[in-house]
Image 1 (spheres, helix red, strand yellow):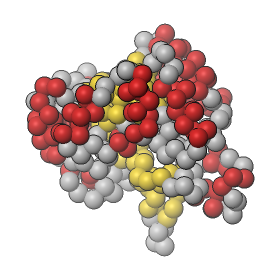
Image 2 (cartoon, rainbow, N blue to C red):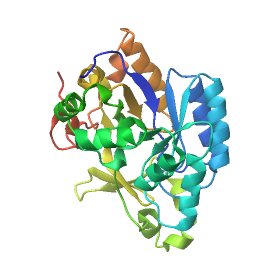
Image 3 (spheres, rainbow, N blue to C red):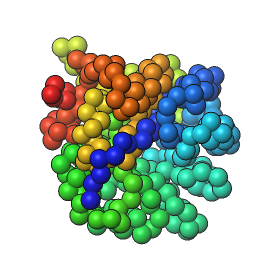
Length: 298
């Protein structure tokens, strides 16, 4: 059965590689914001080490002291034994819930008897899979990005009262795919193992345009993202009605803290004009359309 209560606001893990000082300054602002839940950790590339697992855990303690629920996120594409060690360190942190973005992380958490959040890349597309992972310890899941609202409602109704909490990706560039190859390194004509961490120069990813000059995709290391910002915030009531318990905002270095507070004001019945969609935003997946299509005006 789906609900219509006001959803909580979650800050997803940062997809980009920012300098340490910028990262800490961003989360200081998030700590003072209306966000309810904050996900921390490197989910894209294990070579990004401005903050190591111990640093993320320490940052989590600071945010928890500020009243935030803290969740540690694991890598999405695991390519080496050393990267699996990084996943184990996050899973065995001993303090915070973990978001598993790969089934290897689910196995580690299951072996430890620990509850976990299922990231959107576990590819849960039906109620049977949802309940199976619930039985393995999953207390929350993030809906796959391309599912529409009608499908979500039907899936949750089929799962019944045993369903875990549901989180929906509501704002940010959509993470679409990962590759063993690094697109940023290739752009700079560098080998992946000697990339120089050039993605730190692209705090919002690097645009890939069509021949007509339209932003089509965004490259972010080994990750491919949508070109447009996926923005369902103006439709937050529709997401809540479909069963979303949390709305996820993916970090962007400048606008996210202000958007969090604007969303909180809109949920409180105050001015919602700050959530009005930009002409370049998209949100079609939620409505069963192509993902790059905008959300309806009404």
